[in-house]
Every structure is written in C-alpha cells, then in structure tokens.
Image 1 (cartoon, rainbow, N blue to C red):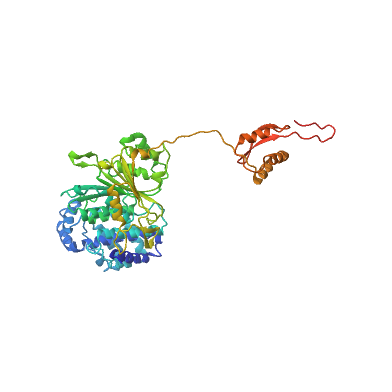
Image 2: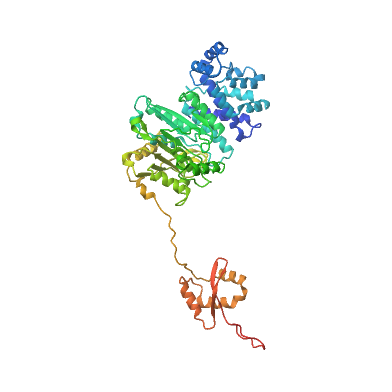
Length: 575
C-alpha cells in the first residue's frame, strides 16, 4: 500500500472520533483544516526555534508585512508561525487546548491566517472543546507525519482529494461536484505540453497556467510536477480560483507549501465565482486547464452573465452566446478563451493552449441557432478547436457518464490548421480491483505488471495526427450545419381496431350503425392510401360525406346514412 494511502486510512480513522457531535457529512469542517494545519506544523518544525528567536528580536521594531517577510525568510517558506506552540506542545495543556490552538493559528503570517478564516475553523475548535474531543483529535493528528520528506506535494494533494471525495459521498453530493482522476489529468497535461518541448527547454523560461475551477488544486499540482520532471529548467506559475470556501482554502494552503507563488503573497489562488467575480480580469495565461461542474445550472448568475453578453458582446467574455440555464459548461469555456495570450512571436508571446473536461452536453446539446451551437460555431470558425478525446465511462468518482477532453488553442501547428482531430479512447481502460464511488475504471499507465500503457498510446496517437483506427481527422467545415424545415402534404393512414372502435363509440354511441357499416366495408387491415378510403366511402348510394371527427388521437371520416322508415304514422325519413 502506498505511503499516502496509509496516511489517508489513518486520518479517516481519526474522523471517527467526531461521530456524535458531528454527523459524517460534517466531518470535513474539522478534518480538512486540521490536516492542513498539521501539514504546516510539519513543514515549519525544523526552523521553529530560529523563527521564535528572530521574532523576539524584531517584534518591537517591525510589524505587518515587513515583519512577515523577515520571518518568512528565516522559515525558508512563504509563511511562518511565531507562536511558541506546536502540535506536540499543545498536548501538554489539556485544560487550555482550545485557547492555545486558537493562539497557535493566530501566530501564523497574515496569508495563512486569511486561509483559516475561510475554513471558519475557530467555530469548530469551540464545538469540539465543548464535546470533549478536541484534545483527543489533536493528539491523534500529532502521530501523523506530513513532512514533505514523507509526503510529497502530489501525495498531499491526493490525500486532500481522497478525503473530500469521501466527504462528498457521505453528503450524497450531486454528480456536478467531482474530482478529476489523476490519470485523466496526466493525459490532459501531456497533451497540453506535447509540442512545447523546445520552448520549455529554454533556460529561464517562465510560463503561467490558470484553473478557474481549481478545487483543491489537483490539476495545477500535476502540471507543475510534469514541468519539474521533464523541464526542470522552466518555471510554471500556477493560478487558480474557486467559490467553495474549504476547497479554496485547501488549494491556497497547498500552493504556499510548494514555493511557486509568482509574488510570494499567496494571491495566486483566489476565492470567488469565476463566472461573475473574475479574480484575474485583464490577465492572460499560456496554459489553461479545468474540470467545470457537470450539468450545474447558472440561474443565480444569470442576470449578470446575460447583461455582460448583451452589453459588452465580444469585448466581454460571453459574446458568442449563452447556453441553456441548466448547464453552464460552455460559459467556463468562453471565460477561459478570454484569457488567451495573443500570438506575437517578436515579443515572445506564443499564444495559449487549453484543456477542459466536459460531459456530452456541451458537445451535442442545442440545435442550429441555439446558444450552445453559436458558441461551438465561434470556436470552430476561429480555428481554435484542435481535438476532442472521448474518455471511457465510469472514470469519475461521483458519476459514471461519458466524458470528453477538449483541446482548444490559438496556436495550432501548420499541419493542424483548419482541421479537428477526434480520438476515441473509450476502450482504453482497465477495470479497477476496487471501485472508488462510481469510478470502476482507470486508464492504464504500465506501472504494474501486465498493465497496458494506455497513457503513452493515447499521447502518441494524438501526436501523430493521422486518420485511422481510433483517430479521425476532419476539416472544420465538416462540422457546420443548418437546420432546415421541410414541409410535405399531410399523409393519413386508416385502420380500425377493436380498441379504437370501442373508444370511438364510448364517445359517440349514436353512430353505432355507421361505424359497423364502415368496419364491414373497409375491414381491419391498415390502408395507407387515405384518398382511396375517402373515394370508396363516397361511392355508397345512400350516404353523404361529412367532415372528419377526432376522438382521442384518432381521426375517422364520418358519414351519415339515411335511417330506414319505422312504418309508424307521422314518421319522416331523416336526411
């Protein structure tokens, strides 16, 4: 079993201590912030004494950002803690542990204190203390070694995502709230960087990447790991935004530990709804990556989005159109395209590449002229859509539906211009030994014995850009279409069945004789030529034709037959 999996299991056992005061769906209120806190505690442990000594010397001379910067330098991180407490020392005073833990959190630099404000952890400290479980939880977490030498940044991200996935399952979250499997992220990252080897191999290269729905930051972490492994001479600055407070706080704290912030202030990960509160307005990025929620409506944001669409047009983010209100996926795509860097080789601007995961809805929904169709048309007519990869089903933790990776870019290679590559990767999977929620399949990476190397095969398939097998190449124009309404004369079909006859007579019992005659003359077999039926009926010498009558969803031609005289005095033949 992997080290990070051992940590996940142990942390999950600690979560059982919350049972009683907390319901299982509420566990994340405690487990995420205290896991982050323990990670910080382990990261800062080795330099703790030096920071405390420096703090005592400087606290009367400096404060605010100036003091933070000097103490950060001593800690060797983008943050520090000048409280005398650690997890180990917190155990020494059970009676005052709630007050001491709050004091410990307040001892962090301002960027970390701000993160814990989004966790709203002080309320949970008080709640656990009242339930007499706070000391026990802190003591158990002190046994978990989360130092980077024991748990890598990638491993830490997997711990966060595994915990959140379990919390979401307990809360019975919808399919829209899900996490992207690591192998899917790896495929997206490999395809994003597939042709940029020469650029990234240049010493001193700095690139920027944005994830507007970053969650806990898993996609950004995987992209940075790829650059670190394949192009160590390059630097990838990661930026993200999310509107979920705990997910944002988790991603922001994780980014602090990685020491990759562009300006060291911790503002690379920002809180807010990307659709109506763009925290990176006016900024552009070299790479964009995202997994927006599947099938989540945007009714709450509708007024502001429609206003931007109508007032700003293409100078805003949503000029191409707005999709139906029950799925905002294509709004995120337009938002990401608005962050594209223009191609200007002279000024070392090489354009942008984008990878995004969608369900089938953005691909197929909406007829010609609809908002969805107009957005797709805008993307294709600008020659930005490079490829779509159809993934296997049952790949995601909270949904088994089919998913697709879209690759969109404003810097296609010459061979790809005017063309779109479709890759069918639906059979590139292996069954997992143990399901994780709805996830029963994964893309093989050749890591285990006899495991197929699906990942490498798909990357090669993409890179070759050849039509054949699971890869098809189409011209952009082949995806255009127009909806045409073709009108034709009404075609009627006649057939009398027992059920139709009964239903008609229940509604018009006075026409029994007429229906019996029609039934006898025309029979029960279907007649496709309605004109022949009408002509045959008009040939009866004693009947006249009357307009069609509808009963239910059936239509028959009603004919009135003369009634025979009864022989009584005063009776007249009806006409």
